[in-house]
Structure formats: structure tokens, C-alpha cells
Amino acid sequence: MPALKGSLTYARFFVEGEPPKDFREKFMRAIRLRAMQPLEADDDVAERSGWCAIGEPFDIDLHYEGVFFNNFINLGFRTDRWSIPGPLLRTRVREAESAYLLKRGRERLSRSEKAELKEVVARKLRKQFVPTTRAVDLSWSLEDGVVRFFSQSARPTATMLELFEKTFGSKLVPEAPYTLAARLGLSKAEDQAWTKLEVTQLMAAGES
Image 1 (cartoon, rainbow, N blue to C red):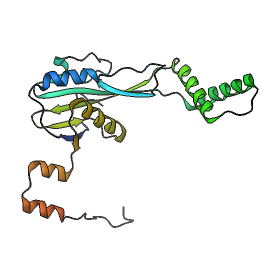
Image 2 (tube, one colour):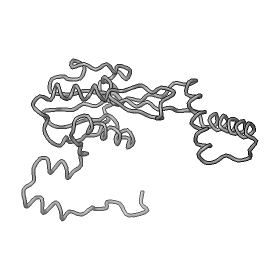
Image 3 (spheres, rainbow, N blue to C red):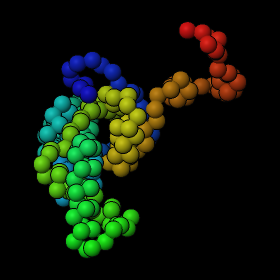
Image 4 (cartoon, helix red, strand yellow):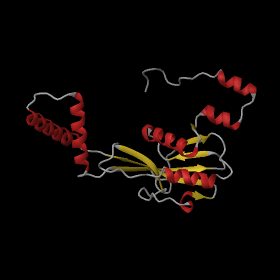
């Protein structure tokens, strides 16, 4: 999902805390440490995420000039995932199970043997495919303490939140009416009034 072109659909998050004084060097080291490492066929994981250059999913050699722009940190959040067609995997697994049983003169496999054979077959098939790659742009306004993540899908967002905290040591708080109001500053009276608010249903059940 691009920040530099295309439709501007994004989710906003507030960054808890302030960056350290020497944040540029610290952040750059942390970003490089968690830069994307492309999936390999023999890896033990079926999916991996990491940072890449904004707008360039396959550029994982990150430098200051590509990450820092004025008071912004711009990154791409890339995820690689193996996506082997289900019917092909099931067929090859059945073939492997049959050959395994025939070789050992047995009729059944244990649960652990089935899992092991499936993993062996999957690794062999991965060498015939390439992992799917998806990248989502992220822009952090250091002055405002606001991160814009150019996706609203739950799964990549959850993974990005985890990686962001590991990289920068700060949690992201999703923008919502209350979090926005609290960030702007509520008086004691306003805070008490807010807690008494109730959800109003504008449409009766069954209406469309």
C-alpha cells in the first residue's frame, strides 16, 4: 500500500513517549537490525516481516537519506509469505506418506511423522516457487508523534505494531475519539462528562 502514490487510505497511531536525544543513530541501528530478511526455502518459518525502503519493497539496504526526511521517518513494512497451492501440497503429502508406509511395511503414520513429512514436502515445493511479497508504507511525524500506516487490514497492522515496538521501544496507540481527546487534553470536568457518554443507535435493528 503506497504513501507516495495511489489512494491515501491509512490508519493513524499516536506514539507513546518522546524520541531520545540521539534518536537518529539509535533508530538507524535498530531499523537495520530489523530490516527485512527474505524468506528462503529451507527456513523454519512460513512468513517473515521486516523494514524496507518506502515505496521500494526489495530495497532492504537502508540508509539515513532514505529513512529520514525532515521531521519524518519513512519506511516500508514488508512481509514475505510462502503460498503453495493447497491441492498440490495435499497431493504431494499423500504421495510421500504412501511411499513412507510402503518402505517401512506399515499401515499408519503417527501424528509427529505426518507433521514431519508435511514439512519436508513443503520445503521441497518451496524451491519451485517464490514467496509472495506485500509491502505497506509507514510515515512517522516526529514533530507530531503520529504514525500513518497505509493499510487498515488487521493482520499486517498487528504485526507492524509488534515490530515497531521492538524497533523503537515505543508503543503505538490507535487513533480513536477518546485517545484523540485525551491527547488534545481534557479538563477534569470534560473527562468526567466523557466517561458518562453512551453509544447512540441511529438506526433501529432490521432497518436498512
